[in-house]
Length: 64
Image 1 (cartoon, rainbow, N blue to C red):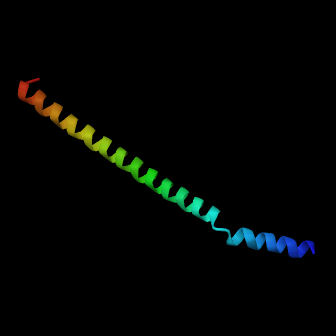
Image 2 (spheres, rainbow, N blue to C red):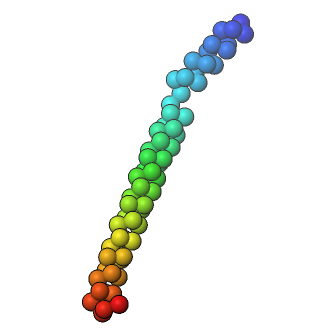
Image 3 (cartoon, rainbow, N blue to C red):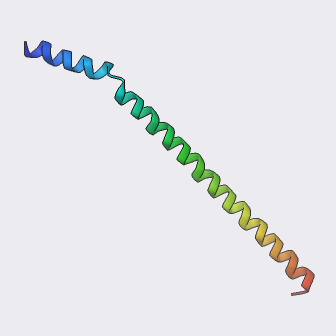
């Protein structure tokens, strides 16, 4: 009887969808955070390069 009860419990756990939904949301959140982090990193580098180029152009125009 114990073996049948444990198999039933395992089957209920496998077919329960509440945990699946939570895992799907966690995966989506992780992907969104990853894309946001990559975007911020890319934009930070692009912004730094732009400001460096502007600074060099201004310094060249002034004659420094």
